[in-house]
Amino acid sequence: MLTFPFTGVLGAKRRPALVLLDAGDEDILVARITSALARSAFDVKVQNWRGAGLLLPLVVRLHKLATLEKRLVARMLGALGAEDRDAVRGVLATMWTAL
Image 1 (cartoon, rainbow, N blue to C red):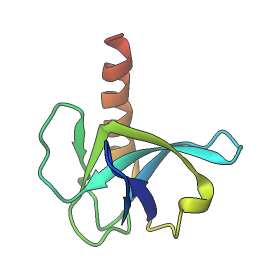
Image 2 (spheres, rainbow, N blue to C red):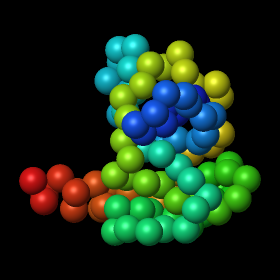
Image 3 (cartoon, helix red, strand yellow):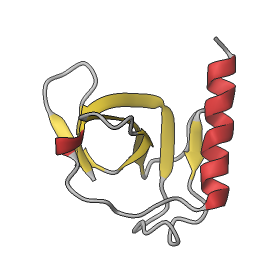
């Protein structure tokens, strides 16, 4: 759970996020997580959300990325299982090959 900035306006909201990269410095690369339905090919529905330690079914929005300071992380909710991690990797691979 971290404080995620709004797009285009001032302010922020505490929300879950998936850490995609921790390079060992003070920042992390995260993807937004939402309870809204999947709307694009870049949204990954977490299949094993209970096993991941989440409270309800969620969607990882891989096209909504942010680089944030680690100090904004309030707590760790859980971790994705292998199947969900593979799904995220597959969508990320598709995104980056489109460049």
